[in-house]
Length: 111
Length: 114
Image (cartoon, rainbow over all chains, first blue to last red; front, side):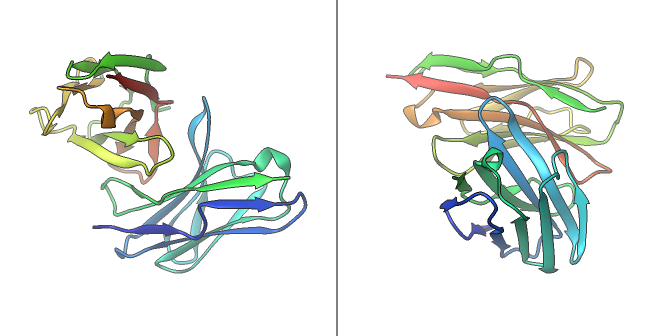
């Protein structure tokens, strides 16, 4: 079975902090994705990566950056956290034309 | 632009009954894939069922089946013999065969009542 592991289930940070969310997949998938999920807004894509060091903006990239130095790891960075970035963050991975597999999610609170 | 619409924000069903969740999509592509995902409360998003557009036969996974109407661009999910564990958010998603990103519906919250 594919396993996608997110580093934290719950995280509390302060405004202005630099925040790192880590995601690791164990199936050699080429694609990795970061979403945020808010009630009534569904899943919104922040960034995705289709190869090491390659990335593309999703629908809501503002205030975020990503890093993919190794194929199995995809990091989401909040450069200067703000309260409107309080949300559930989901990481996923996939092969081309295959379903995405998700981690457990990180519930991030910015105080 | 490709879109996915789930017209039922919330639904409820009695245990052991059958319920159908609707999903429509819009695309000009001929090669694509459709998925239903399930997200139980505070739990992981998991794939329920998938359908390739070129396959005419409707996909089935145990109690879950789809009604894929390609001309109408409709992809509904039928859950038979509903169980309490089926209580979850259900998301419909579309994947263009030439793309890597899923297009998501906003979800349907399904409550299965005892």
